[in-house]
Structures are given as structure tokens and as C-alpha cells.
Image (cartoon, rainbow, N blue to C red; front, side, top):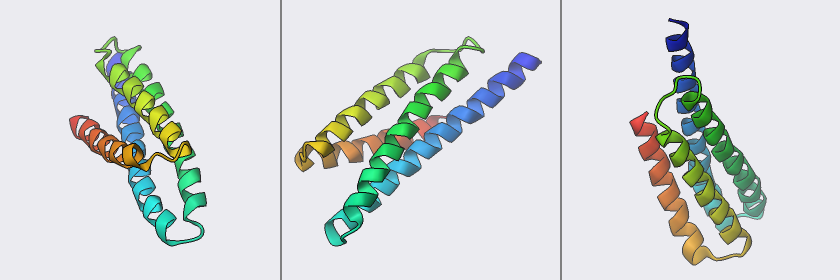
Length: 120
């Protein structure tokens, strides 16, 4: 019974991590719009990028914690790690000012994050 409770807590932590990641990506889209229209948009988008990257790392941690104690499928860990790679590429493209790839990748990441959330 204790193992089931631990697995349930890990599952909810994983779901919260995915929700946080999805929310931060959405807020990045909002701050990208502000980047184009206001003087403080660049600062907001820059800070948001760090928060989004942190949320992606939290997703990896939550996936590992959900997988290890319960001995479940490692698939969520692979998804979370893949997402962290996408987030790393996204940050690099943003720093390099490559909007032709940065923007579509952001849309893809939001879609994948919503999909991951729907699956949990």
C-alpha cells in the first residue's frame, strides 16, 4: 500500500511539473509578443527563458522520481530528457537571434508539452 501511495505522489508531482512547463512555455509566447511591442518585453522574455528551462529540468527530475521508486516505464524519462534537449536548442537559437527556427520550435514545444499533459 505504501508503494502505491509513493507512486501516486510521484505521478502527481510529474503532472504538476508538466503543467508548470506548459504554463511557462505559454508565458514565453506572451512575452515574445511583448518583446515586439514594448521596451520591457526583452527582459521579460529573457527571464521567462530561464524559468522555462528550469521547469524543463524539473520535468526531468519528476520523471526520474516517478520512474525509479515504482519501477514503471522509463518512457516519461526519455520524453522529459528529449524536451530538455529541445529547450536547450531553443535557448541557443534565442541567444543567436535565429527567429526563423526559434519561433516554430517554440510552437512545437508548446504542442508537445500540451500533449504530454493530456497523456498524464
